Length: 213
Image: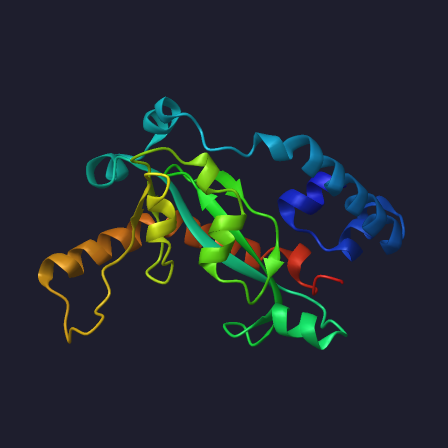
């Protein structure tokens, strides 16, 4: 039941019908076992050694960004509205225009999830999450981390010798050069793995409902 819930994203009502139990039973079982699986398998979510990354790295990464260890991005999940005004302010996301919890995810070039942060209040900046999540402790000198242009954590990554790779945005220029345009297209095509992961999370029925307080 739990594997069908996690792997296929089936609705609790569907599982209750299949297993001939109540919806409450399905909810209780999946909630308990998901916590247990997280405690058992959570430590296995790690950035692989350099040799393993190189072995499974797609050719396009090897040709363009061979030192990339992670493609990172933040994602947000809707939550119930807190009663405290202070907590409401901390959890309010201007991007989603509602109260959210926010997490930082990291994907290897081959598409495997290699980093998952804890949840932070929705108003927390990407920079603060990068510092508090423990990501910096897992990076080595000259590791490249790929991200979208809004992920402005160059200094934080540089503090451990890592390098941030992002698209070149215009700033005060009216138009990008040909080389910058090609660079942006390349980064966008390489970031497709993390974008697909975010899409899978958004389409996962487990997150259909707001996170309860």
